[in-house]
Amino acid sequence: MQGIMKQAQKMQEDMAALQEELDAREYEVRAGGGVVTVKINGKLEVLSIEMDPDIVDPDDIEILSDILVAGVNEAIKKVNETNSSEMGKVTGALNMPGIPGLF
Image (cartoon, rainbow, N blue to C red; front, side, top):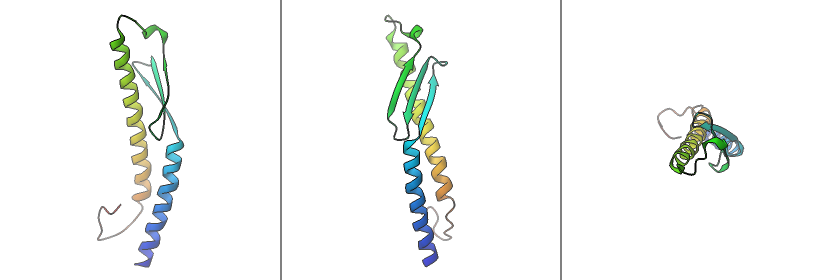
């Protein structure tokens, strides 16, 4: 039992360190065929949005809005997928027979 507790404590420490690393990462996602670039960090904070000036049509702001929303949503999805994958590497390493889904 003591071995399991040490293993769980180590996993918690590894998860905390990994979460800190993941929060500091920056991601860049392109949307609308590359006309919009969204930069986001691991905390899901949008750092910047860059747009090709050719897509700014004052008579059709709706398209620009749709592309921006798609870009932000894709960036959030990328962060969430990366975080889940990386955390799975840490939590999947814990072998606790008889306690499925503990972590």
